Image (cartoon, rainbow, N blue to C red; front, top):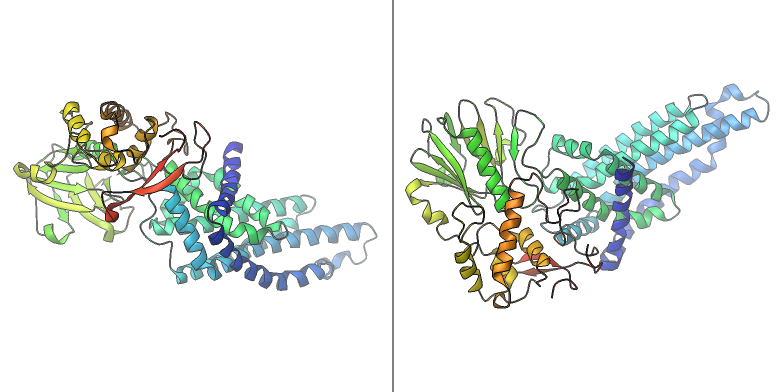
Length: 518
Protein backbone atom coordinates (compact mmCIF):
# COMPACT_ATOMS: atom_id res chain seq x y z
CA UNK A 1 0.00 0.00 0.00
CA UNK A 2 2.85 2.39 0.86
CA UNK A 3 4.56 1.59 -2.45
CA UNK A 4 1.33 2.28 -4.31
CA UNK A 5 0.85 5.58 -2.49
CA UNK A 6 4.43 6.52 -3.42
CA UNK A 7 3.74 5.55 -7.04
CA UNK A 8 0.89 8.07 -7.05
CA UNK A 9 3.24 10.78 -5.77
CA UNK A 10 5.82 9.90 -8.43
CA UNK A 11 3.13 10.12 -11.10
CA UNK A 12 2.59 13.78 -10.17
CA UNK A 13 6.34 14.39 -10.37
CA UNK A 14 6.41 12.93 -13.88
CA UNK A 15 4.13 15.76 -14.96
CA UNK A 16 6.97 18.25 -14.43
CA UNK A 17 8.91 16.69 -17.32
CA UNK A 18 6.45 18.30 -19.73
CA UNK A 19 7.95 21.72 -18.86
CA UNK A 20 11.11 20.43 -20.53
CA UNK A 21 9.52 18.82 -23.58
CA UNK A 22 6.67 21.31 -24.17
CA UNK A 23 7.62 24.51 -22.31
CA UNK A 24 5.38 26.89 -24.29
CA UNK A 25 2.27 24.79 -23.83
CA UNK A 26 2.87 24.33 -20.10
CA UNK A 27 3.56 28.04 -19.63
CA UNK A 28 0.20 28.89 -21.19
CA UNK A 29 -1.33 26.46 -18.71
CA UNK A 30 -0.15 28.71 -15.86
CA UNK A 31 -2.43 31.59 -16.85
CA UNK A 32 -5.79 30.08 -15.77
CA UNK A 33 -4.27 29.12 -12.42
CA UNK A 34 -3.07 32.71 -11.88
CA UNK A 35 -6.58 34.06 -12.52
CA UNK A 36 -8.19 31.47 -10.24
CA UNK A 37 -5.71 32.07 -7.41
CA UNK A 38 -6.36 35.82 -7.55
CA UNK A 39 -10.11 35.23 -7.25
CA UNK A 40 -9.71 32.83 -4.36
CA UNK A 41 -7.15 35.08 -2.69
CA UNK A 42 -9.72 37.86 -2.53
CA UNK A 43 -11.90 35.48 -0.48
CA UNK A 44 -9.32 33.64 1.61
CA UNK A 45 -7.25 36.62 2.79
CA UNK A 46 -10.17 38.25 4.68
CA UNK A 47 -11.01 34.81 6.09
CA UNK A 48 -7.51 34.34 7.48
CA UNK A 49 -7.40 37.87 8.88
CA UNK A 50 -10.76 37.36 10.56
CA UNK A 51 -9.94 33.93 12.00
CA UNK A 52 -9.73 35.14 15.65
CA UNK A 53 -13.22 36.60 15.40
CA UNK A 54 -14.56 33.47 13.70
CA UNK A 55 -13.05 31.23 16.40
CA UNK A 56 -14.57 33.40 19.13
CA UNK A 57 -17.99 33.31 17.41
CA UNK A 58 -17.91 29.50 17.25
CA UNK A 59 -16.87 29.14 20.91
CA UNK A 60 -18.92 31.68 22.95
CA UNK A 61 -18.95 29.21 25.85
CA UNK A 62 -15.21 29.82 26.31
CA UNK A 63 -15.52 33.57 26.86
CA UNK A 64 -14.95 33.21 30.57
CA UNK A 65 -12.28 30.53 30.38
CA UNK A 66 -8.92 31.42 31.92
CA UNK A 67 -5.73 31.65 29.96
CA UNK A 68 -4.18 29.69 28.37
CA UNK A 69 -7.16 27.32 27.86
CA UNK A 70 -9.26 29.84 26.02
CA UNK A 71 -6.43 30.64 23.60
CA UNK A 72 -5.59 26.96 23.02
CA UNK A 73 -9.20 26.05 22.29
CA UNK A 74 -9.77 28.91 19.91
CA UNK A 75 -6.44 28.27 18.17
CA UNK A 76 -7.48 24.64 17.65
CA UNK A 77 -10.88 25.72 16.34
CA UNK A 78 -9.22 28.20 14.02
CA UNK A 79 -6.96 25.43 12.77
CA UNK A 80 -9.95 23.22 12.03
CA UNK A 81 -11.80 26.05 10.27
CA UNK A 82 -8.69 26.69 8.18
CA UNK A 83 -8.49 22.99 7.28
CA UNK A 84 -12.14 23.03 6.19
CA UNK A 85 -11.55 26.21 4.19
CA UNK A 86 -8.52 24.64 2.49
CA UNK A 87 -10.53 21.54 1.58
CA UNK A 88 -13.20 23.72 0.02
CA UNK A 89 -10.68 26.08 -1.58
CA UNK A 90 -8.81 23.23 -3.31
CA UNK A 91 -12.06 22.01 -4.87
CA UNK A 92 -13.13 25.51 -5.92
CA UNK A 93 -9.66 26.30 -7.27
CA UNK A 94 -9.57 23.11 -9.34
CA UNK A 95 -13.07 23.64 -10.71
CA UNK A 96 -12.47 27.30 -11.52
CA UNK A 97 -9.07 26.69 -13.10
CA UNK A 98 -10.24 23.78 -15.25
CA UNK A 99 -13.21 25.81 -16.47
CA UNK A 100 -11.21 28.95 -17.27
CA UNK A 101 -8.34 27.04 -18.82
CA UNK A 102 -10.29 24.34 -20.65
CA UNK A 103 -8.75 25.09 -24.11
CA UNK A 104 -5.21 25.07 -22.67
CA UNK A 105 -5.68 21.92 -20.60
CA UNK A 106 -7.34 20.17 -23.51
CA UNK A 107 -4.16 20.71 -25.50
CA UNK A 108 -1.95 19.53 -22.62
CA UNK A 109 -4.07 16.42 -22.20
CA UNK A 110 -3.96 15.63 -25.91
CA UNK A 111 -0.16 16.16 -26.05
CA UNK A 112 0.39 13.65 -23.24
CA UNK A 113 -2.04 11.17 -24.82
CA UNK A 114 -0.10 11.34 -28.08
CA UNK A 115 3.26 10.98 -26.31
CA UNK A 116 2.04 7.88 -24.49
CA UNK A 117 0.88 6.27 -27.73
CA UNK A 118 -2.55 5.18 -28.99
CA UNK A 119 -4.33 8.37 -27.86
CA UNK A 120 -8.04 8.39 -27.15
CA UNK A 121 -10.00 8.85 -30.40
CA UNK A 122 -12.42 11.41 -28.91
CA UNK A 123 -11.77 14.73 -27.24
CA UNK A 124 -11.62 15.08 -23.46
CA UNK A 125 -15.07 16.58 -22.96
CA UNK A 126 -16.84 19.74 -24.08
CA UNK A 127 -16.74 23.12 -22.33
CA UNK A 128 -20.18 22.79 -20.75
CA UNK A 129 -19.29 19.33 -19.52
CA UNK A 130 -16.35 20.95 -17.75
CA UNK A 131 -18.64 23.57 -16.23
CA UNK A 132 -21.08 20.97 -14.93
CA UNK A 133 -18.26 18.86 -13.51
CA UNK A 134 -16.82 21.97 -11.89
CA UNK A 135 -20.11 22.74 -10.15
CA UNK A 136 -20.31 19.16 -8.93
CA UNK A 137 -16.77 19.45 -7.60
CA UNK A 138 -17.66 22.62 -5.68
CA UNK A 139 -20.72 20.97 -4.11
CA UNK A 140 -18.65 17.97 -3.01
CA UNK A 141 -16.00 20.35 -1.71
CA UNK A 142 -18.61 22.10 0.45
CA UNK A 143 -19.74 18.74 1.87
CA UNK A 144 -16.14 17.78 2.65
CA UNK A 145 -15.55 21.13 4.34
CA UNK A 146 -18.64 20.65 6.53
CA UNK A 147 -17.54 17.14 7.45
CA UNK A 148 -14.02 18.33 8.32
CA UNK A 149 -15.49 21.08 10.47
CA UNK A 150 -17.73 18.65 12.34
CA UNK A 151 -14.96 16.11 12.90
CA UNK A 152 -12.58 18.86 13.94
CA UNK A 153 -14.87 19.87 16.81
CA UNK A 154 -14.49 16.44 18.45
CA UNK A 155 -12.63 17.04 21.73
CA UNK A 156 -8.92 16.14 21.81
CA UNK A 157 -8.77 14.10 18.58
CA UNK A 158 -10.62 16.53 16.34
CA UNK A 159 -7.63 18.79 15.76
CA UNK A 160 -5.79 15.91 14.10
CA UNK A 161 -8.63 13.90 12.57
CA UNK A 162 -10.21 16.92 10.86
CA UNK A 163 -7.23 17.99 8.74
CA UNK A 164 -6.28 14.36 7.96
CA UNK A 165 -9.82 13.61 6.82
CA UNK A 166 -9.82 16.77 4.72
CA UNK A 167 -6.53 15.83 3.05
CA UNK A 168 -7.70 12.30 2.24
CA UNK A 169 -11.15 13.19 0.94
CA UNK A 170 -9.99 16.26 -0.98
CA UNK A 171 -7.07 14.35 -2.49
CA UNK A 172 -9.37 11.57 -3.64
CA UNK A 173 -11.79 14.11 -5.08
CA UNK A 174 -9.05 15.99 -6.94
CA UNK A 175 -7.63 12.80 -8.45
CA UNK A 176 -11.02 11.71 -9.72
CA UNK A 177 -11.80 15.10 -11.18
CA UNK A 178 -8.44 15.44 -12.94
CA UNK A 179 -8.52 11.96 -14.49
CA UNK A 180 -12.06 12.55 -15.72
CA UNK A 181 -10.93 14.08 -19.01
CA UNK A 182 -9.16 10.89 -20.12
CA UNK A 183 -12.10 8.72 -19.10
CA UNK A 184 -14.62 11.04 -20.78
CA UNK A 185 -12.70 10.64 -24.03
CA UNK A 186 -13.01 6.86 -23.73
CA UNK A 187 -16.70 7.09 -22.86
CA UNK A 188 -16.27 5.12 -19.62
CA UNK A 189 -19.34 4.78 -17.42
CA UNK A 190 -19.38 5.68 -13.72
CA UNK A 191 -19.30 1.99 -12.83
CA UNK A 192 -16.26 1.41 -15.05
CA UNK A 193 -14.43 4.37 -13.52
CA UNK A 194 -15.23 3.22 -10.00
CA UNK A 195 -13.84 -0.21 -10.85
CA UNK A 196 -10.60 1.38 -12.09
CA UNK A 197 -10.25 3.54 -8.97
CA UNK A 198 -10.99 0.65 -6.61
CA UNK A 199 -8.13 -1.40 -8.09
CA UNK A 200 -5.62 1.37 -7.33
CA UNK A 201 -6.99 3.24 -4.30
CA UNK A 202 -3.60 3.94 -2.75
CA UNK A 203 -2.06 5.17 -6.01
CA UNK A 204 -5.01 7.46 -6.73
CA UNK A 205 -4.88 8.79 -3.17
CA UNK A 206 -1.12 9.37 -3.33
CA UNK A 207 -1.53 11.42 -6.49
CA UNK A 208 -4.45 13.45 -5.09
CA UNK A 209 -2.91 14.15 -1.69
CA UNK A 210 0.41 15.16 -3.26
CA UNK A 211 -1.44 17.53 -5.59
CA UNK A 212 -3.37 19.11 -2.74
CA UNK A 213 -0.26 19.55 -0.58
CA UNK A 214 1.46 21.29 -3.49
CA UNK A 215 -1.51 23.66 -3.63
CA UNK A 216 -0.67 24.75 -0.06
CA UNK A 217 2.83 25.92 -1.00
CA UNK A 218 2.87 29.65 -1.82
CA UNK A 219 2.69 29.87 -5.60
CA UNK A 220 2.55 26.07 -5.81
CA UNK A 221 -1.02 25.94 -7.06
CA UNK A 222 -0.13 28.06 -10.09
CA UNK A 223 2.81 25.87 -11.14
CA UNK A 224 1.27 22.52 -10.22
CA UNK A 225 -2.10 22.89 -11.98
CA UNK A 226 -0.86 22.26 -15.55
CA UNK A 227 1.50 19.64 -14.15
CA UNK A 228 -1.42 17.90 -12.45
CA UNK A 229 -3.40 17.88 -15.71
CA UNK A 230 -0.49 16.23 -17.52
CA UNK A 231 0.21 13.80 -14.69
CA UNK A 232 -3.45 12.87 -14.29
CA UNK A 233 -3.42 11.74 -17.92
CA UNK A 234 -0.51 9.45 -17.10
CA UNK A 235 -2.39 8.22 -14.02
CA UNK A 236 -5.51 7.49 -16.06
CA UNK A 237 -3.48 5.50 -18.59
CA UNK A 238 -1.82 3.59 -15.73
CA UNK A 239 -5.25 2.70 -14.33
CA UNK A 240 -6.40 1.54 -17.75
CA UNK A 241 -3.26 -0.55 -18.17
CA UNK A 242 -3.95 -2.24 -14.84
CA UNK A 243 -7.43 -3.13 -15.98
CA UNK A 244 -6.18 -4.57 -19.27
CA UNK A 245 -7.53 -8.07 -19.29
CA UNK A 246 -9.56 -10.63 -21.20
CA UNK A 247 -11.78 -11.55 -18.30
CA UNK A 248 -13.53 -9.01 -16.10
CA UNK A 249 -14.71 -10.16 -12.68
CA UNK A 250 -17.47 -7.57 -12.24
CA UNK A 251 -20.11 -8.73 -12.58
CA UNK A 252 -18.95 -12.33 -12.12
CA UNK A 253 -21.45 -13.75 -14.56
CA UNK A 254 -20.22 -11.83 -17.61
CA UNK A 255 -17.01 -11.95 -19.58
CA UNK A 256 -15.43 -9.06 -21.40
CA UNK A 257 -13.13 -10.00 -24.22
CA UNK A 258 -11.08 -6.92 -24.69
CA UNK A 259 -7.71 -5.24 -24.27
CA UNK A 260 -7.52 -1.63 -23.14
CA UNK A 261 -4.67 -1.22 -25.60
CA UNK A 262 -5.20 -1.64 -29.31
CA UNK A 263 -6.14 -5.30 -29.99
CA UNK A 264 -3.38 -7.26 -31.69
CA UNK A 265 -3.18 -10.85 -32.87
CA UNK A 266 -2.97 -12.32 -29.38
CA UNK A 267 -6.04 -10.35 -28.24
CA UNK A 268 -8.13 -11.50 -31.20
CA UNK A 269 -6.96 -15.10 -30.68
CA UNK A 270 -8.18 -15.06 -27.07
CA UNK A 271 -11.41 -13.38 -28.15
CA UNK A 272 -12.09 -16.15 -30.66
CA UNK A 273 -11.28 -18.83 -28.12
CA UNK A 274 -13.70 -17.41 -25.56
CA UNK A 275 -16.47 -16.92 -28.09
CA UNK A 276 -15.92 -20.50 -29.16
CA UNK A 277 -16.19 -21.70 -25.55
CA UNK A 278 -19.39 -19.70 -25.02
CA UNK A 279 -21.29 -20.41 -28.25
CA UNK A 280 -19.94 -23.42 -30.15
CA UNK A 281 -22.27 -26.40 -30.43
CA UNK A 282 -25.47 -24.46 -29.65
CA UNK A 283 -28.18 -23.12 -31.93
CA UNK A 284 -28.63 -19.38 -32.39
CA UNK A 285 -31.72 -18.04 -30.59
CA UNK A 286 -31.02 -14.35 -31.23
CA UNK A 287 -29.19 -12.73 -34.13
CA UNK A 288 -29.12 -8.96 -34.48
CA UNK A 289 -26.65 -6.97 -36.57
CA UNK A 290 -26.92 -3.21 -36.13
CA UNK A 291 -25.08 -2.09 -39.23
CA UNK A 292 -26.89 -1.01 -42.42
CA UNK A 293 -25.26 -3.46 -44.82
CA UNK A 294 -26.17 -6.52 -42.72
CA UNK A 295 -29.20 -5.39 -40.71
CA UNK A 296 -31.58 -7.76 -42.50
CA UNK A 297 -29.47 -10.91 -42.09
CA UNK A 298 -31.02 -13.44 -39.71
CA UNK A 299 -29.22 -16.65 -38.72
CA UNK A 300 -31.63 -17.60 -35.94
CA UNK A 301 -31.96 -21.37 -35.61
CA UNK A 302 -28.58 -22.06 -37.24
CA UNK A 303 -25.91 -24.01 -35.31
CA UNK A 304 -22.73 -22.25 -34.16
CA UNK A 305 -19.80 -24.29 -35.47
CA UNK A 306 -17.13 -22.21 -33.74
CA UNK A 307 -14.99 -19.09 -33.79
CA UNK A 308 -11.53 -18.58 -35.27
CA UNK A 309 -8.98 -15.80 -35.59
CA UNK A 310 -6.99 -14.92 -38.69
CA UNK A 311 -4.49 -12.24 -37.77
CA UNK A 312 -6.66 -9.40 -36.47
CA UNK A 313 -9.84 -10.73 -38.11
CA UNK A 314 -12.48 -12.63 -36.14
CA UNK A 315 -14.58 -15.29 -37.87
CA UNK A 316 -17.71 -16.70 -36.18
CA UNK A 317 -19.05 -19.60 -38.24
CA UNK A 318 -22.81 -20.14 -38.04
CA UNK A 319 -24.61 -22.63 -40.26
CA UNK A 320 -23.26 -22.10 -43.76
CA UNK A 321 -22.36 -18.46 -43.07
CA UNK A 322 -19.52 -16.61 -41.36
CA UNK A 323 -19.91 -13.47 -39.26
CA UNK A 324 -16.72 -11.48 -39.83
CA UNK A 325 -15.70 -8.67 -37.46
CA UNK A 326 -12.64 -6.52 -36.86
CA UNK A 327 -11.97 -4.89 -33.48
CA UNK A 328 -9.69 -2.08 -34.73
CA UNK A 329 -8.86 0.25 -31.81
CA UNK A 330 -11.96 0.24 -29.62
CA UNK A 331 -13.85 -2.94 -30.46
CA UNK A 332 -14.79 -5.57 -27.90
CA UNK A 333 -16.93 -8.66 -27.48
CA UNK A 334 -18.85 -9.20 -24.24
CA UNK A 335 -20.44 -12.48 -23.19
CA UNK A 336 -23.52 -12.41 -20.93
CA UNK A 337 -26.18 -14.74 -19.67
CA UNK A 338 -29.52 -14.20 -21.40
CA UNK A 339 -31.41 -11.34 -19.79
CA UNK A 340 -28.36 -10.04 -17.91
CA UNK A 341 -28.00 -6.25 -17.93
CA UNK A 342 -25.34 -4.95 -20.29
CA UNK A 343 -22.51 -2.88 -18.89
CA UNK A 344 -22.33 -0.58 -21.90
CA UNK A 345 -24.77 1.71 -23.75
CA UNK A 346 -26.97 0.00 -26.33
CA UNK A 347 -26.11 2.54 -29.04
CA UNK A 348 -22.54 1.16 -29.14
CA UNK A 349 -23.69 -2.38 -29.92
CA UNK A 350 -23.03 -3.59 -33.44
CA UNK A 351 -23.73 -7.32 -33.18
CA UNK A 352 -25.66 -9.73 -30.93
CA UNK A 353 -25.40 -13.50 -31.21
CA UNK A 354 -27.38 -15.37 -28.57
CA UNK A 355 -27.93 -19.01 -27.67
CA UNK A 356 -30.04 -20.57 -24.93
CA UNK A 357 -27.12 -20.31 -22.46
CA UNK A 358 -25.04 -17.31 -23.55
CA UNK A 359 -25.30 -14.02 -25.41
CA UNK A 360 -22.32 -12.50 -27.22
CA UNK A 361 -22.47 -8.73 -27.73
CA UNK A 362 -20.06 -6.93 -30.07
CA UNK A 363 -19.42 -3.30 -29.14
CA UNK A 364 -17.74 -0.60 -31.25
CA UNK A 365 -16.79 -3.13 -33.93
CA UNK A 366 -15.14 -1.43 -36.89
CA UNK A 367 -16.21 -4.04 -39.45
CA UNK A 368 -19.23 -6.35 -39.41
CA UNK A 369 -20.10 -8.51 -42.40
CA UNK A 370 -21.79 -11.84 -43.12
CA UNK A 371 -20.58 -13.98 -46.02
CA UNK A 372 -21.01 -17.62 -47.04
CA UNK A 373 -18.35 -19.64 -45.23
CA UNK A 374 -17.04 -20.88 -48.55
CA UNK A 375 -16.20 -17.26 -49.43
CA UNK A 376 -14.18 -16.45 -46.29
CA UNK A 377 -11.01 -16.23 -48.31
CA UNK A 378 -12.12 -13.06 -50.05
CA UNK A 379 -12.05 -11.40 -46.61
CA UNK A 380 -8.83 -12.89 -45.22
CA UNK A 381 -7.13 -14.48 -48.21
CA UNK A 382 -4.81 -11.52 -48.61
CA UNK A 383 -3.31 -12.01 -45.15
CA UNK A 384 0.20 -13.31 -44.65
CA UNK A 385 1.07 -16.27 -42.42
CA UNK A 386 -0.24 -16.05 -38.86
CA UNK A 387 2.22 -17.08 -36.10
CA UNK A 388 -0.73 -18.14 -33.90
CA UNK A 389 -2.17 -20.42 -36.56
CA UNK A 390 -1.55 -24.16 -36.64
CA UNK A 391 -0.59 -23.62 -40.30
CA UNK A 392 2.13 -21.07 -39.50
CA UNK A 393 4.53 -21.02 -42.46
CA UNK A 394 7.73 -19.36 -41.28
CA UNK A 395 9.45 -19.70 -44.65
CA UNK A 396 6.60 -17.93 -46.46
CA UNK A 397 6.55 -15.17 -43.82
CA UNK A 398 10.30 -14.66 -44.25
CA UNK A 399 9.87 -14.54 -48.03
CA UNK A 400 7.06 -11.98 -47.89
CA UNK A 401 8.64 -9.70 -45.29
CA UNK A 402 12.11 -10.02 -46.82
CA UNK A 403 10.85 -8.88 -50.23
CA UNK A 404 9.45 -5.63 -48.80
CA UNK A 405 11.77 -2.68 -49.37
CA UNK A 406 10.08 -0.19 -47.04
CA UNK A 407 11.11 0.74 -43.49
CA UNK A 408 10.97 -2.35 -41.30
CA UNK A 409 8.36 -0.84 -38.95
CA UNK A 410 6.01 -0.21 -41.89
CA UNK A 411 6.68 -3.63 -43.44
CA UNK A 412 6.08 -5.46 -40.15
CA UNK A 413 2.68 -3.79 -39.73
CA UNK A 414 1.57 -4.77 -43.24
CA UNK A 415 -0.77 -7.70 -42.60
CA UNK A 416 -0.09 -9.00 -46.11
CA UNK A 417 3.45 -9.88 -44.97
CA UNK A 418 2.67 -11.31 -41.54
CA UNK A 419 -0.75 -11.35 -39.88
CA UNK A 420 -1.22 -10.43 -36.24
CA UNK A 421 1.54 -7.96 -35.37
CA UNK A 422 0.35 -4.46 -34.49
CA UNK A 423 2.02 -1.24 -33.44
CA UNK A 424 2.98 -2.38 -29.94
CA UNK A 425 4.56 -5.59 -31.19
CA UNK A 426 6.43 -3.76 -33.95
CA UNK A 427 7.97 -1.24 -31.53
CA UNK A 428 8.90 -3.85 -28.93
CA UNK A 429 10.30 -6.48 -31.31
CA UNK A 430 12.48 -3.91 -33.06
CA UNK A 431 13.84 -2.77 -29.70
CA UNK A 432 14.61 -6.32 -28.63
CA UNK A 433 16.48 -6.89 -31.89
CA UNK A 434 18.26 -3.51 -31.69
CA UNK A 435 16.82 -2.26 -34.98
CA UNK A 436 15.75 1.32 -35.75
CA UNK A 437 12.15 1.53 -37.03
CA UNK A 438 13.36 3.40 -40.14
CA UNK A 439 15.88 0.72 -41.17
CA UNK A 440 15.14 -0.57 -44.71
CA UNK A 441 13.80 -4.12 -44.48
CA UNK A 442 16.46 -5.63 -46.81
CA UNK A 443 19.08 -4.65 -44.20
CA UNK A 444 17.30 -6.60 -41.44
CA UNK A 445 17.70 -10.25 -40.45
CA UNK A 446 13.99 -10.92 -40.94
CA UNK A 447 14.31 -14.62 -40.04
CA UNK A 448 15.59 -13.79 -36.57
CA UNK A 449 13.03 -10.99 -36.15
CA UNK A 450 10.11 -13.26 -37.10
CA UNK A 451 11.36 -16.07 -34.89
CA UNK A 452 11.40 -13.69 -31.93
CA UNK A 453 7.99 -12.30 -32.90
CA UNK A 454 6.40 -15.75 -33.18
CA UNK A 455 7.78 -16.86 -29.82
CA UNK A 456 6.68 -13.61 -28.14
CA UNK A 457 3.12 -13.53 -29.46
CA UNK A 458 2.66 -17.19 -28.56
CA UNK A 459 3.86 -16.53 -25.03
CA UNK A 460 1.37 -13.65 -24.73
CA UNK A 461 -1.46 -15.67 -26.28
CA UNK A 462 -2.46 -17.22 -22.96
CA UNK A 463 -1.69 -14.22 -20.75
CA UNK A 464 -4.31 -11.84 -19.45
CA UNK A 465 -1.71 -9.03 -19.53
CA UNK A 466 0.56 -8.68 -22.54
CA UNK A 467 4.22 -8.24 -21.59
CA UNK A 468 7.51 -7.91 -23.45
CA UNK A 469 9.80 -7.50 -20.46
CA UNK A 470 8.68 -10.65 -18.67
CA UNK A 471 7.24 -8.50 -15.87
CA UNK A 472 3.47 -8.32 -15.45
CA UNK A 473 3.39 -5.33 -13.09
CA UNK A 474 1.54 -2.27 -14.45
CA UNK A 475 3.84 0.19 -16.18
CA UNK A 476 6.65 -2.37 -16.56
CA UNK A 477 5.42 -4.52 -19.43
CA UNK A 478 7.07 -2.66 -22.34
CA UNK A 479 10.59 -1.53 -23.18
CA UNK A 480 9.79 1.45 -25.40
CA UNK A 481 6.12 1.42 -26.43
CA UNK A 482 4.23 4.29 -24.80
CA UNK A 483 7.37 5.46 -22.95
CA UNK A 484 8.38 8.56 -24.94
CA UNK A 485 10.53 10.92 -22.89
CA UNK A 486 11.24 8.30 -20.21
CA UNK A 487 14.62 6.59 -19.60
CA UNK A 488 15.40 3.40 -21.47
CA UNK A 489 15.23 0.43 -19.11
CA UNK A 490 18.59 -0.78 -20.42
CA UNK A 491 20.80 2.26 -20.96
CA UNK A 492 18.94 5.25 -19.48
CA UNK A 493 18.72 7.20 -22.75
CA UNK A 494 15.39 8.97 -23.19
CA UNK A 495 12.96 7.06 -25.41
CA UNK A 496 11.94 8.89 -28.57
CA UNK A 497 8.76 8.81 -30.61
CA UNK A 498 7.95 9.53 -34.22
CA UNK A 499 5.49 8.69 -36.96
CA UNK A 500 5.90 6.19 -39.76
CA UNK A 501 3.49 4.87 -42.35
CA UNK A 502 3.01 3.59 -45.86
CA UNK A 503 1.70 7.08 -46.69
CA UNK A 504 0.80 10.25 -44.70
CA UNK A 505 -2.78 9.02 -44.19
CA UNK A 506 -1.67 5.78 -42.50
CA UNK A 507 1.11 6.95 -40.23
CA UNK A 508 1.47 5.23 -36.86
CA UNK A 509 3.32 6.40 -33.77
CA UNK A 510 6.47 4.44 -33.07
CA UNK A 511 8.94 4.45 -30.20
CA UNK A 512 12.63 3.64 -30.01
CA UNK A 513 15.82 4.04 -27.99
CA UNK A 514 18.41 5.99 -29.99
CA UNK A 515 21.26 4.20 -28.18
CA UNK A 516 20.04 0.59 -28.16
CA UNK A 517 18.60 0.67 -31.67
CA UNK A 518 20.87 1.51 -34.59
